[in-house]
Image (tube, rainbow, N blue to C red; front, side):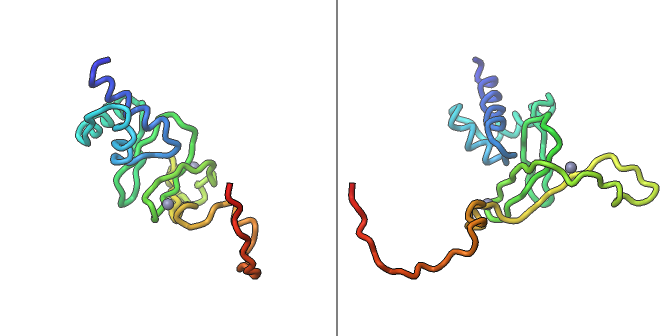
Length: 148
Ligand SMILES: [Zn+2]
Ligand SMILES: [Zn+2]
């Protein structure tokens, strides 16, 4: 395979394999493992051509560099983690925004960006929340750990 094609394919695959939109530096890090000698200029150039060809789309972020995801996904929105700068895909939609649309305006679409902290950055796993407040360990009886 021609070098340029290989680079393009590795960048496309990096975005496809991620389960969330990636930034340029995330794409560079992910694609570097697949093709050697990849630089940020090549990533920029390749992303531009992938967007032009309709294979990936740019996810616009207010006050943040854009992220990239594969084109043609179902309608969805994003969650931006302020802790680690990662952007996650969120399923579903609150739906009809026509009630917010000023009278006489014609609504053509919407974009919703949630932000906050992901489960890693919030310091708790989603499963841990269901178990209620954790009790401090009352009993201090230390059991010697059985070595294997
Ligand atoms: Zn995070
Ligand atoms: Zn929506």
